[in-house]
Length: 92
Image 1 (cartoon, one colour):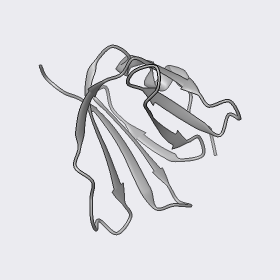
Image 2: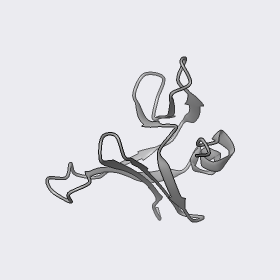
Image 3: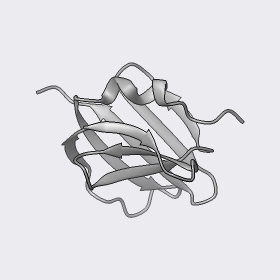
């Protein structure tokens, strides 16, 4: 399986996005949040990719997740946790 690449998600830097995390069952879902991505980078142990919203807060998705994407949307499904991480550009 190919790991997630930084260049695949750098298009979201500096862009308003809607972030959501959903479980595999489609059960309870945390509300989606609108943020602007400040930077993306690998975590120190290179197991996750981080979407930073400021210098402290970030969303981390496992690098081994299965990814589906388009120009305005990026989703990563982690089969180990059953979670889907979604990042979608929003119109301002």
